[in-house]
Structures are given as structure tokens and as C-alpha cells.
Amino acid sequence: MTGLVKKVDEATAKHKKQELGSFVIFLDKSDEMEKKVSAFAEKQGIKETVLALDNPGGPRGYEIAKEAQVTVLLYVGRQVKFNFSFEKGKLTPADVEKVIKELPKILEE
Image (tube, rainbow, N blue to C red; front, side, top):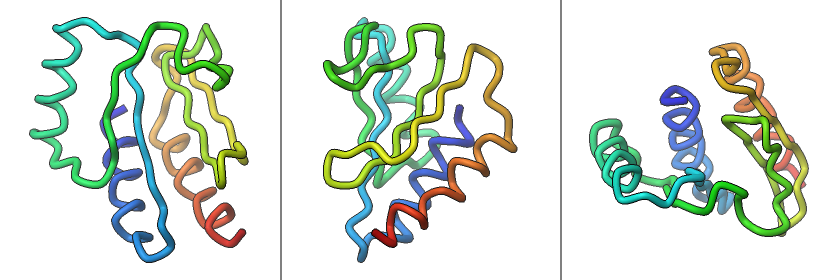
């Protein structure tokens, strides 16, 4: 997960002129998770990606897969172009690269 967030943050900075934005939502609104996310952002140097907390069901209308530990949505103008879901322990470095490789496709639109 750390690798994914760092690469998304780097891509967001790289494509700032194209107005690429990114956010990561952690589906746990506990005080403990808030502290972990804050420490994570500081330790990893996350600058461009918004890190947020939400209820376990995820934001309304986002159709987050319940069995997924990680869901990545790439969208343009509020329309989802790519949806990647990963079960617990199934997110690999190859998957991270696959997600990052899809970014140019949505930036071309």
C-alpha cells in the first residue's frame, strides 16, 4: 500500500499542469487510524495526495468492493474510468505499476 500511495503522489506532482488530483480514503474513522494516517503522510512525505478517513462502507456512490482491502479509482470529471480492487494481501508491486500505467490514458481525455 505504501508503494501505491507514494507512486500516486509522485504522479500527481508530475502531472500538476494537467490538473491531476488524487486522494486516498481509509475506511476507518477511528482516532487511532487518524493518528496512523497522519504519521504515514509525514514519514512518507506525501505532499500532493489528499488522505482522508470515511466509514467502512466508503463514500456513497463509489461502489467500493466490500471484500477489497484496497480500491483504486481513476476518474475524470466525476466519471470513473478505471476501478481496481485488491483483496487483503493481494496488492503486489506489479499491480501498483499497472495502476500507474493507466494514468496517462485518463490524462489524454
